[in-house]
Length: 192
Image 1 (spheres, helix red, strand yellow):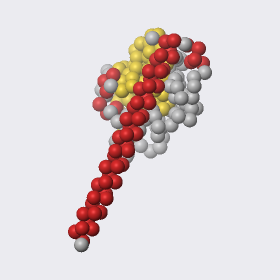
Image 2: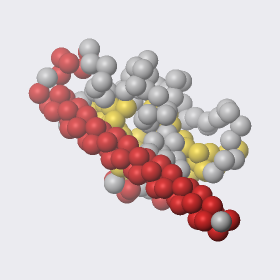
Image 3: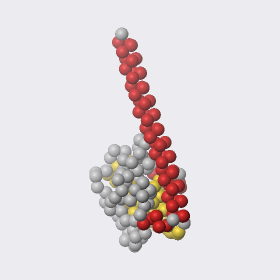
Image 4: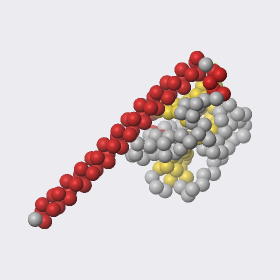
């Protein structure tokens, strides 16, 4: 009797685990599909009708972050858009500049880990000199990674800044106690 109960409980836990990971996997595929469509829509919009940039729809990306080294491409919403939420996407930090501003400091954050919203889960694979691409307002910004470091995760993040250069910083968690910070400097920009 005890053995049957243990078996039943074990099967119940296994079933729940499979259901959880199955749903998470389904959500991840749905999110990737939606992202690919919105990325495609972003580039089509930029090529065909620049006037749409001044008043983008709420569900359209305003920028695309591409990291060729890890085959990453994901869009970003305006900071004040309700879809610009760390639990749903990568986001511009509230204090971030936009890349077209003079000596801008663009800061993008995202989750890492094993869940369906862990878009920055492969940032640890990046190395100095890898490129980061940011498409914004019909311009492709190419940044080269110049520094990678970790800081203690305490709810705040102090970033060093070079006021004479345009920079892009990516931030994600590394375990429960640290944050991974990747700093890149603009090397070129051109219309696309």
